[in-house]
Length: 42
Image (tube, rainbow, N blue to C red; front, side, top):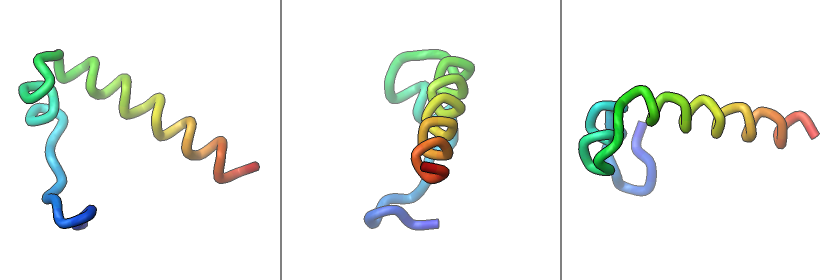
């Protein structure tokens, strides 16, 4: 899927770009998905 003209990146790519671990990227992603799901349900 194309978001605003940008190719999606893997968790590993994002972790490398931000200088954090892939597992931390995964935790951030999970938290964001839960927040979005909560907002959609309201």
